[in-house]
Amino acid sequence: MNCKSVLNVKLSDVKKLGKINKEYITKSANKYNKNKIDEFLTLQFDGLEIYGYLKSPSELWLIHVTITSHRWGILYGLIVGSDASRISQYLGTPVEQKKNMKIYYGESERVEFSTEGNRISKVELFYYMD
Image 1 (cartoon, one colour):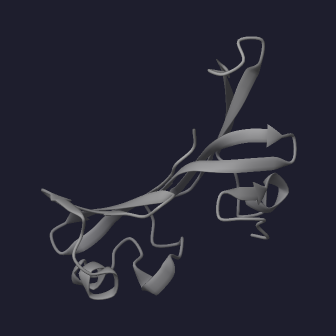
Image 2 (tube, rainbow, N blue to C red):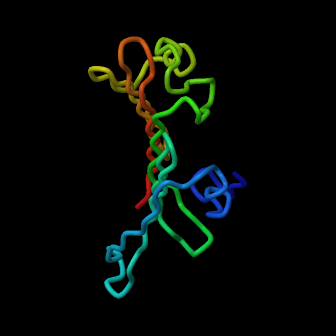
């Protein structure tokens, strides 16, 4: 994707990722301006779901990305199906650890790795947006 920032992507680039199985928009009142309605887009591909704020008809601000298939790459090869011990090897000790989940926080994002056995089963990326 050709991004202006980690959070801000061209919608046309996202739609080129593959065959879209489902696409829908939800609307919500803007919490700062009661006269404005915000639109949020969800795109579902095989093993990938992308949810974000539609800043304009061509601009998407990512909020949540869920990966459930090995077909979608991620940094350091921490893809679904890979050895879960690689998570700590590349990212260090998680900030938070729950049963079958390792959580890492950054300044503008959070990533959660779900595991089954000793394999990564799901990766979720959360981008903070106010």
